Image (spheres, rainbow, N blue to C red):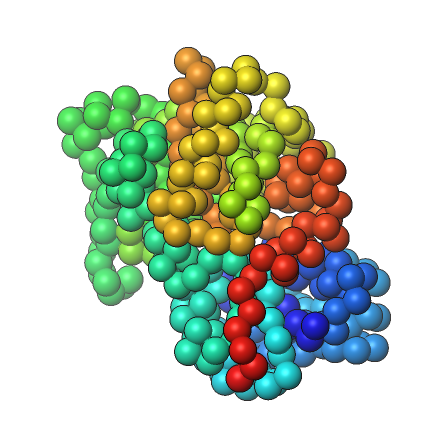
Length: 347
């Protein structure tokens, strides 16, 4: 099959997307597919001999530079979709965050009648919007930490003095609280706020990534995640940061975190997490592969944080670790994702 891997892009998760795209491309090549790799941030296209040479060094500059040309941010995804070679049979979406994960790319591919991996427009948009997905979790009886929303002015040059009153802080259980952008992944822009004096700074940090910031109840306990592959929940993974909390650095720095797969938790707790992971994905109408992140409270109560519809597929990512626990190699995982994608009639 001739498959285009879309990766890189212009979001804050660009570097991780490049790593995912490289890993997926190597797996597809080993499975015998004809692969085209496209960085939508730079417009760099690799195929045939150039692609094979570039992928010999994962994440190398030959695949895509991590420094984004200034004009690239204004290109958008539409030219790439309109210019998609007509012999492309499938797009493997490896774009994390931004227009690659919020439903924009999925809508363009639907209009172009190009099959693609992962969730469709609705699920992608809902999952990327943390506030909306949390509202659905509440409606569906899926526990999620309480939160407060703060909207910044549309014009980023206008002053914004965000505050929370004492009643709101009390409703969130007091300090510490979690401040995060509404529509980012990989813990980009997240701050653990231990006192009121640091709240404004954390909200302004979240503002850099979008107008809506969430202030969320802090759940003391453990970091766990459930990967869902083709409507099957994989074993629970526990993430154990060596220091602090599981931020961007701990996710993507070798040795900064440890992982237990399956997580060493009571059987009934594991079963509940698997059930909640499936329910969260079904509630948002996800398909293909997704990852559901939880905090497991000290009292054993799981709280759903978010659903990732384009989860990382790097050498350190959580979905491959969960798949390995049931005997699936990285190549097996990629094969399952490809084979679970509905393929439409030729354009």
